[in-house]
Image (tube, helix red, strand yellow):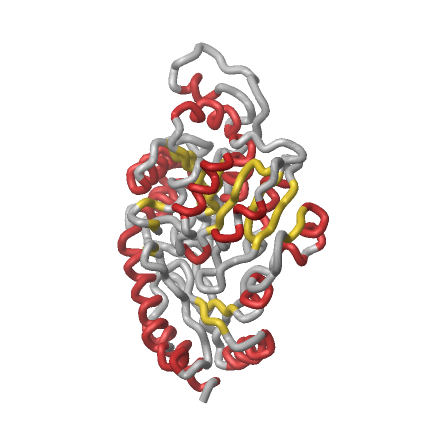
Length: 375
């Protein structure tokens, strides 16, 4: 069976985890946590990056730091993972879903402003498949209405918008290092922000509401509980695992990009025949080969293709069921305007196997099987 995903592994993960144990510092903010944070700050060219236990927790931190209050409204796409919405629901916010663009599967920037009300507090954008949203237009709307912008960049580490790293354009950027992502620590994430004034509040929030980080830096002689917080700090063992991959980030990205380009070239003929649609990459975006998907004619065709490929030992998956159609989506939010594309496009999308060091033989079997299905 060709798996849909295989977690990345470079070969030095166990060595670094052993080092963390030998350092007798396996809880949070150890040597490897600091290495990863510094690497991300330099690569993203932003002032502050804090590792978290998940992208979900990074989003929760962003919601708190953005001062989301009960009754506030947050505009976001319905085509996203539940964590994008949950982070704001936990703060008592109401969700306002707007439609996506059918080309990138990202929030349609042209529909955002019409959804703004006097209760709107923030816009949450999702860079689907590591392909940038139209951030200039979104930031203009946010600035005009004095709104916070939270970038769900879970899939977008080392992806860019007009030369700017995704996750560094809005007020907060949230990243994932889940086992399905380009770089992994099993479960993990990070929050990025540029505003120096937020750093102390973010550290306190991440350290269970205490000023413990200042204590460990020797800035205070004891630490205490000073504000609301939770335990968003990952183990240094997880960070050690991640560090082995960040060291090889360029190689991992190149390897994934080779597979992405192979799929794109091999399936071009089917797209030209009108059998499938391929991913669209706008001129302003540099993606990171996080995902390769195709779109079939309809949901029925997709189901038949999934079954056909499984018979040939290929595991493919569809993606999000739109949140506004879920029970919690109806409970905590509403869809603004017409759902022209969110449901229709999500019903057609199929993700192909994509991971670091997938073999040439396996990826060729994937494309040959899809061509066989379409005759």
